[in-house]
Length: 324
Ligand code: DAH
Image (cartoon, rainbow, N blue to C red; front, side, top):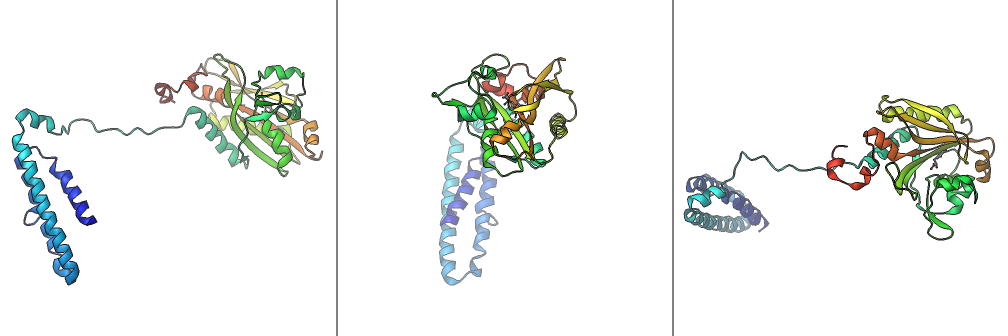
């Protein structure tokens, strides 16, 4: 029965295409003419066992009758159509086909996955992070005690007295330094939150935090990794500079700027050697050293796609996204 059903569906598809009796006749001959599909099926009958033959025979004959009915039906419809109606029903084969639109990665996702590709090649492991954090892991563990001036840079969204929306992906450094086995080589990316809103700041943005703790880690390792990462992402076609900076959780702290097409330097990441105090708090022996970096994904995306307003990334206007 399934066979019959499929065959009829197939026939129906063909029966509704022709708009003239002549075209319909061609299709009819193809299906139920002497050498048509159905007549050919009957040729198989003598190859089947008696039982199968009788069942198959019934099915095929029934299909033939139904098909004949469908043709008669279609014929009378065609005959009743006026010339105008016929023209309307006609398929215009000169029309362009229907295009299938395939989506693409959002620029933010794209930059994250390209960046991950680089770090995974270097042997880093990608781990997810948590966004609702306590002040201890977002600040204190990272050497930012209460009333530390750098807390004011982090316009924080507090949820309760102790809980907040993480202001930096470095919270994962706080957590993973104590839970992972050394040597550690981790990246973790995701949303972070700060109460800011203008052309270059949005209340939520993305960072990729990365760190590496091992015995012979030096600042030159950090510099090479960061430089190679930028060159990988921008295909060697961008100038970068390392600028001395300050972060409470690194000593020998640097910020990295990239030269934009308008000739201005744009800061895209912070990095440095993990402060010995932080390694010590995580019970990591002083034989080990660590490097860390925090990459601003939106900033990279803006340079990568040559944009000057960060908010475009969140408007989700397809006309913009399609250009990326
Ligand atoms: N967490 C810093 C921020 O949000 C970025 C950062 C700077 C991360 C230096 C690091 C680092 O791991 O070493 O501004």
